[in-house]
Image (tube, rainbow, N blue to C red; front, side):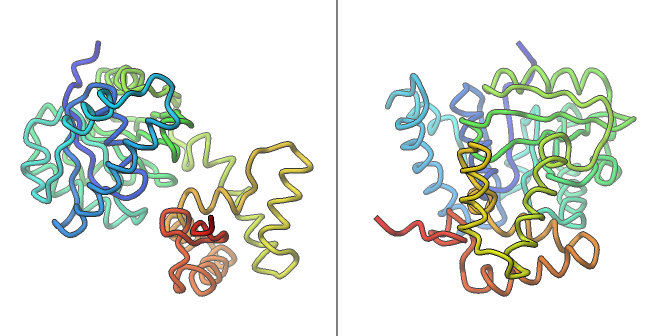
Length: 286
């Protein structure tokens, strides 16, 4: 068993909340941090919603096991409290380099020397963020897929400065919280999953933004022709549109144009994906 028993998750959005709940469900003591108490109201609601989801979808889940997970999960807007006893901190803040760098710089001032830092960045290299952490030997990337209880991979990627002990501890911890660890041999933006997924989703966006086909028809042809359970725009809605928007706006001119289309057509209208009730699809219909 790893020495990681206390996990802190920074950011209580869709994926951050899932990482926190899954870790608590697997027996870890978890602190979930976000910037203010108003945001934490939503975070607590998400945790209650995840408890119900686990009862419905996770084999072996019982009322006692989800209640125990909730008991092991603490919410705070005080970073020093969140990090005080952490063995591992997993960052799940917006996919913007400056925000991540600032987060880890502040975290380094309050976390114990023992604490390993992990970023859940979807596309950024850990070596771009590591210098701001003040502990490059204990810094790496640990990337989760959305719906962690179902799509339970954890891609783990160090930098040339990450110690073997830190890397191995996080790989072992990933198994302990019910993930399938995918150790990466060296850095690659996008890891394995997003190296495949991002170009796929971008191609779909180009079809819709260029008015070649409606999103639902793009999804339909992909499902029918390949037997896949979901089309690309269904995946967009599960991920939430803010994350792909941030990725697009960090890309080249063509990607930024797609980002503007996504923002103007969907995000600015409150259509943020499944979590908001509306995205490319309407999830409020019975």
